Amino acid sequence: QVQLVESGGRLVQAGDSLTLACVASGLTLSHYAMAWFRQAPGKERECVASISFFGHGTYYADSVKGRFTISRDNAKNTVTLQMNSLKLSDTAVYYCAGGIAGSSSTYVDTEDFDIWGQGTQVTVSS
Image 1 (tube, rainbow, N blue to C red):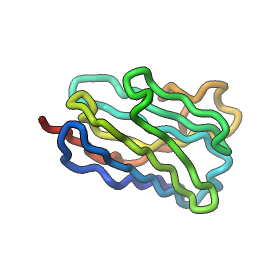
Image 2: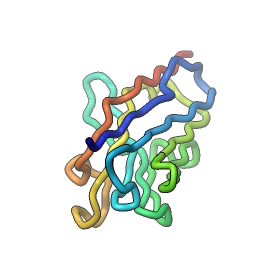
Image 3: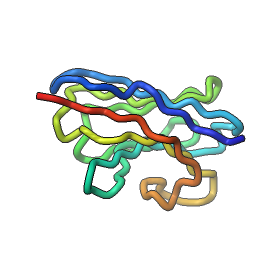
């Protein structure tokens, strides 16, 4: 059974750091581009960061550039999102997503991804 399981979301204060983890099972992680999306109440799901199959290429939304870092360890079937200098506007449910090789050339839109985790809540308070 193919599965992505996120963890690490919690309530933090503005300016704090937080690391989210996504553990994949039932698949070969190197066959998938991976990404973190987030969705705040009343807003569309957006890609905050994505990473290519072996980690050589990354994408970051402008809103998180310089604060968030995505990484992957294919041997451990894990993708992480290091989030620093968190802002109130980072409050959202964060989702891990995987896109099979060959399905896209960019891997930044929701339709580029085939597998989704259940999400983990990140709440940033003042």
